Image (cartoon, protein in one colour):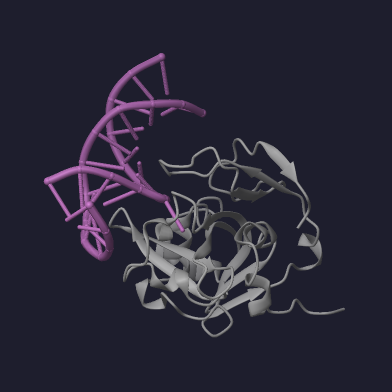
Length: 201
DNA sequence: GCCAGGATCGTCT
DNA sequence: GACGATCCTGGCG
């Protein structure tokens, strides 16, 4: 039996859509907290909804850097969003982590988020960043160094079915099916519409 | 259960 | 000065 291994830079150095798809079932750890990634979205440089679409700025420069870094930014002045930079160095793209199934450090995450059951603890990008304790200070940090760890899927998540559908909370390019979620469909932010089944992770 | 509205602030025009 | 890759609450059935 082999313990799940950490994803290397090679995992992230390819199509951001493949990366976002294949992240489903992987384990994200941040310090002692984390869980299984069950929902992601991909944002590519030629995509009007991508922060890099309008060109390079101080905020989005991490997107243009090497793959395997964390891109963190503030949404609506309140919520922190955790992304994983993909594609080659210089090609701006990232996968937004939208939800995880909590498995590690649940008590600590619950303390950060207040009185919540497992279901609402990490079921949304803002929620999961708050639960993990991810902040702007982690923008540009390597996902393969502490406090981050990203592990390949454990046995019960290997080859799990993935569904794709339209992305959420954006106003442009809303028709593109670049939201991925686990077909088993627990702990995701929107249990609803996944429209199309795609190949297994 | 569904939907409307408010909170709150960094970033770019 | 406007606008979000969101979340929570409260009102209404």
